[in-house]
Length: 409
View 1 (cartoon, rainbow, N blue to C red):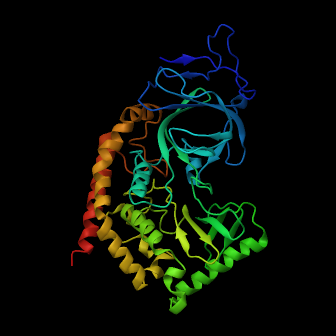
View 2: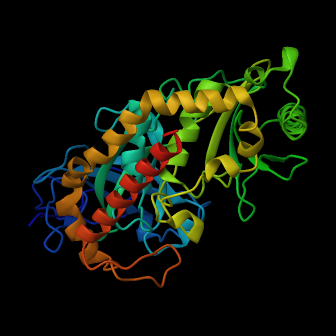
View 3: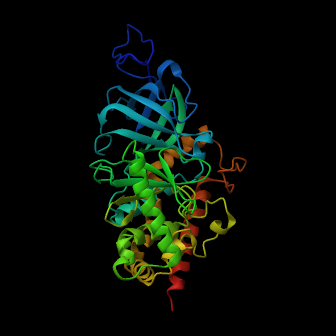
């Protein structure tokens, strides 16, 4: 058992430490019920143990990472707030971390902004992690780096999380110019969207992540371009100097498409969490990939629970894009060239599972949800973690075989 009294290296914790404590530069963590499982343990204490109640309030906090028997870092200052769309309403919610200074974790490049994602709706806890491995294998221009961790918040064990790089413009993240004619933007759903945003004539909502605080002229530049693109999509007007590759980077698109289609990701069908970049005078680039908890049969809609059928290519922008010969040919060639990588993902699941197997025991001791289907995010009941993983693997194998059958002729 590791039980350490909290120190006061920063003025924010509000914690009391004993004068007899040998090293006061520690946050408190009691792992007697949730023993070390081979993963780093993140310990966060908010000022005055303030509850995280929304996604807007930034709460001053302290942060430390533990190994098996001792801290791996000093105590760091940061602010913490809730994060996620519908996932923030779950009992185990995500958090946005913003440190006072740039920090590096587990070899990932330094930055101030990080995220903790709980994956509460994925009973395997593997879907997001393995899809980022696939993104890396396919050499996406940027794949958010992540690491499995266990979280203690205000001296309470919260469970198994992924510590993520957030999607933002930076040298080691989305590496694009920061100016008024270059954009990182995200397709949003109709239930929640944050300013600044633009709404196209086809009622698609896009949140502008960069540039920050764009003025009206800058927002109009992006909106006019998206409106013209949607008009060309509806009219199939990609001729002459306006060929499709002038509007969309086809290489980026087919990589994005196949990761979404192979996983039948519910959000990937032009719903939300779809990131794109655009620089004035250039094509739209799809990516980075993000958010795959509603994938591989773990879906809200019955059509997506089945392993067969095309899904992503029927979406708002994607359906007219797939009427274009250049796009269809590029997508077909991409699958044939890279299908071995998709197959390798299935074969890699035992390795990924082994990383978190012990932590999953702690997770289900804290959140006994294997048979729970009452929360909207919890789909099928399982008798064991083995069954949850095996069900997903079987779905993936059938999905791969179904796609192969479509190219058999």
